[in-house]
Image: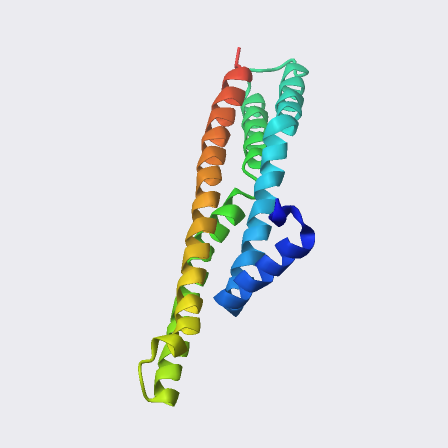
Length: 176
């Protein structure tokens, strides 16, 4: 219950970001952006996609000609527009999923550079002196991988939903 207190939660977040270094802040920003896009896609799939599909079906049903080359081109356009709307932001989410582990790796490298810097300055391998650098090396790696995995689950689900929706709209826009 203590973490529900905003002051304690903020303090814990600042401690975590301080232990992970500046790269962890970048991972946090990228992760928030990725999750904003994931939430937008979840909202689309929970309601807006039905309207997009119905609009394409109405446009196709309003046509009297379903057999000509021009009708086939319009059908393809309606399918393409529906697919494009369904897959909006998927490539951005996919790119952010790929970037977060790379940022974690950058955090690992910068943390290890700090460890080596401490070793060079102190002239010894004192574990207490190296602890801050080691945490700056491991925490961003963990955060980058966790962020990537959380996004990977959703992008795979979105890709399956796009494929299913494309197949469905193709079946719904029958050629007589």
